[in-house]
Image 1: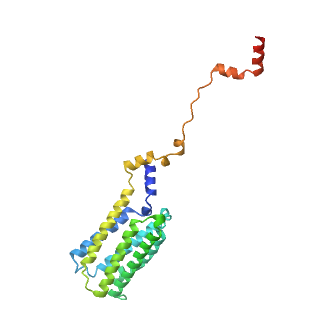
Image 2: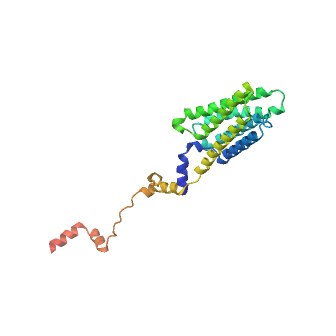
Image 3: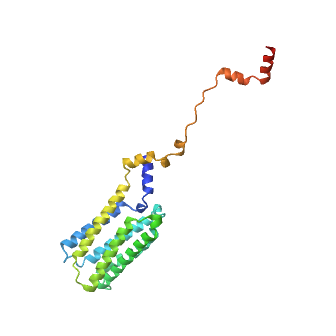
Length: 246
């Protein structure tokens, strides 16, 4: 019964299909660590902020692709949008992470590439949520990820244009994003656990009962006695003649 209740609960949560809660939690912890580092040492983290954001985009894209390869996630209507955003984020993330080891891409060009990648990834994620809102609902995971990507894109565009943005703002954004992602991972983890209330509700729900259990039992009939069996075996003509002789 507990397994049946768990299956019923998971069917009602389409936003968690194909996602591993520990992967989402690891992303949240990485965001928190990056935010603490940037806020504590903004001068030292000035050149590392771009790589940190690119690494987050790369990790998020890889996790989305891994989720998309899960056969159980194929029925998720938002998955095509998520896979398209993951492909864009994977390309941009690789370019930005490897940029410090190459001289072909300048720092400002890397910032613009990263900002455009975040903008495209966030816009695709939110578009997928909006386009599939009737069949898949307003899924929290893509909304959080898309909002984070758009927020970092705006900060990067502003920093490229003005060069006056305090690096602590990136740290604050990373801390806020880390808290949201960790909260989402906790919600995914809780969705895997069936509480006694859910199990009791599934046990009393007639839709979760089997067809055999819902069928009423057949009425009990007494076994025929030996006298009744003899009367049934006597031909009708014999009975008539016996009554005539009497």
